[in-house]
Picture 1 (cartoon, rainbow, N blue to C red):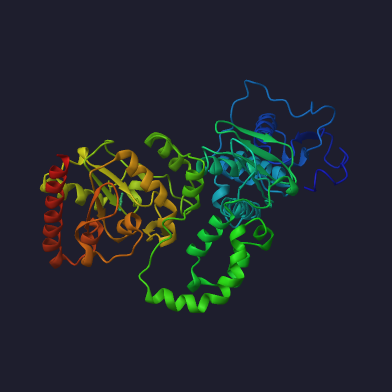
Picture 2: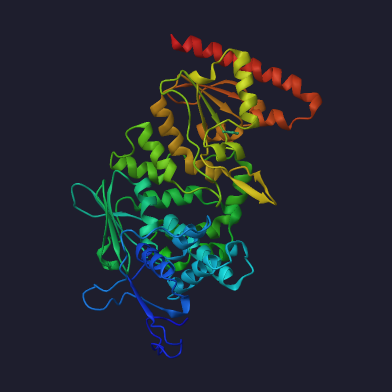
Length: 490
Ligand code: URA
């Protein structure tokens, strides 16, 4: 099917005598309009070749878009189709609606498992479009920079961004999650969106010159980028592909890139010498939050933000939140949810979690009275056949979740926090410290006492002959934790 906006209208004769159906959809990503139209067309058995899709050119006063009868029942489609539709509708390709309707038509007419046939040219093309949207969203989330509007009280932040596709509506909830307590506007060449701390409102296109070009926080962003820049990974080609230059001019920290690249070799050497440290104090989310005295005001509000956040890898089922009573004396921090936790949405329910429960029980710690959480809230894995193999989170990923963990522990306010394994130690201290060196009571420079021990999955990986002794040492650690907890309870 040709471009409905530009191709000449084919005569009815070219398609036999049945009339052509014209569908008018809003410019941009008109998901509701498409869904309604697809339901109506499929309900009336209109084949794809009889539909003319027009985007952004409704006749008259926007009046003649396809009408949907209120009683129209939803189409019965296999799982995955709705998600494919939602992911592809924001693509800028004018043929997107025609392609999606063709997919739906074929599925409803005998090819029920069509989406699984990745070699089918239609499915292949839609998959590529879906991936392009994923990349565009990722870029917008990573490279958009808000700047404060000078002289306004209360503070207001504005960002200019040029996405490749119509993704503004899909991208906005991420920024609500990140900057819920701030008032901000995102301007793009095709639309804008404003968040007033309670409601998102979409508006007309913006202009680059309507966004401030710098603000007092410029140096903060630059510092943050310098401190997270990993010279050992300097690969200019990859950097350019990941962060095309069109985004650079919106991002204050990119001013630091040429110098950083020049110094990369020297910094790599220095980095190898040094004990790894994370950029603790410069997290921009925290800095912006502090600047505006904002942020979630309860554990529920924080959890709602975490729940809406993007997973580390596509395919993860959900964010796994901490579990246990607020005010628990002891909190345990693990690494990240595993396969079972990801499926069930609860921490420490898989094999490592069961071992931890058993050891806690033996040490006299009631699991229901403790608070259990993870440094990283999403399961990171690699697919091998049908199996999902755990992947260790990188220091950058741990740092990404760190602000959330700190806020979570602020709300739970335990007296003692137990780091289970090296990732938890990194998240709680910002330092990569070998467990063998630090095992036992620890000062985390926090309002709570600390204790470091091994992760239960380490015990599961040991050879059989070493397991009993290591397990006994783990239980002995937890007994000390129990005693410490009791002494801190006062
Ligand atoms: N390992 C963890 O660190 N956390 C879990 O929740 C499960 C396994």
